[in-house]
Length: 324
Image 1: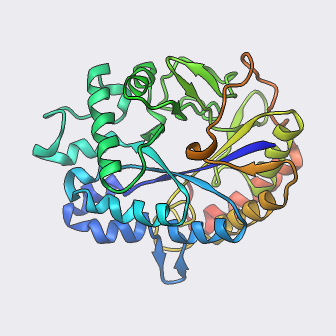
Image 2 (image 1 turned 90 degrees about the vertical axis):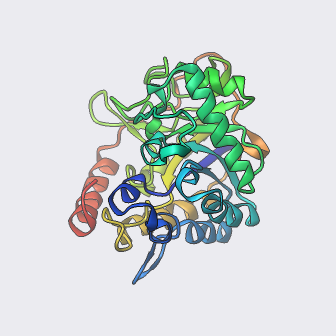
């Protein structure tokens, strides 16, 4: 069975907190986590409803950094429903929150856009603080990590190993020029032991030319993602990783439901549940295992038809709900 990891970066908006100030916690939760709109809610509770309806399990990478300004209760509000519903909680970390932390900054006055902007010792301190805060919020001790903005480097992996975390999934070969500075390339598309942890790349497919396209709900159509998973299964791949966000089914301004993406998400979950030879898995119960050697064979070839249909779908989505 090929294991599919549905990973959801679950995070309050640091940008909203900067614009509106620390008093925006309730509004930030409503728009970034619950994703409530006049036409319905499509955030974490809705996504778990869809997963549960189809017998799927997901991995929620929760960012505890907002506790720097709102306390651990703000993270408990996110973690408790996920744990109660039996899904997996792992560790996410956006260093942008340090700019808002003031005297609560565990690094004093140090700030930075990405985790890679900090030294090894500083990264150890930040990851340790975030891990302990996530556990204080009610999550089991995490074993897996994803850096905010994918902004990790090799020191991040060494820091994770130092702190007892076994897996990282910050390498996204399908995004050229991403913030990730881990010393792996676009050819590294299978789980691999690297710098003391198992690095689990985000899945991708072949695009036009030599380009790759990452397996994110807003980046691929349901047909492309399901074809990629089926191809990985047929090639004997042990796992395939999808990425999404708590707010991904909203419009760009987070004011309304993006019905194009919502339908794509629903089709993806239904298709995945019906696909033979695959199953969803979590890091808590069945973590990804390194592939033999440096396997690079599980890339779905580009289909002009599927790609063209996605372009048309994206054009409608962008026109109705904002580009991005």
